[in-house]
Image: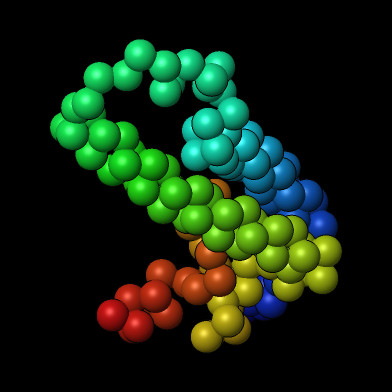
Amino acid sequence: MAKEKNRYGDAELDAFRIIIEKKLKEAKEDLLVLKGSLSHKDDHGTNDTSRTFNMMEDGAETLMREENAQLAARTEKFITNLEHAINRINNKTYGICRKTGKLINKDRLKLVPHATLSIEAKMAES
């Protein structure tokens, strides 16, 4: 009878670290772009010159800014979750379901590297 593993090995954790660090880098780059679009840093100061009054355009711009703000907030949360995953790797607790205490499937962790629940535990929450 094979003994069930209670944590991922160091080599496996290093492989997950690479995946997470790549996603973290991409998310931070995305966040910079989003914040730049929100602060109009990419504007060259000409958006108010010779402007015609167009309520539809103003509404669309406001909607886009709100959507970008929501996307930036989600991206910040994603970054925080990825950083917490790195901490769990450092603590060698990464990949352990916080409800069942069993290992989370590797395929799930590759797709959702910040997951803290196994599929079974996640479905039980629904």
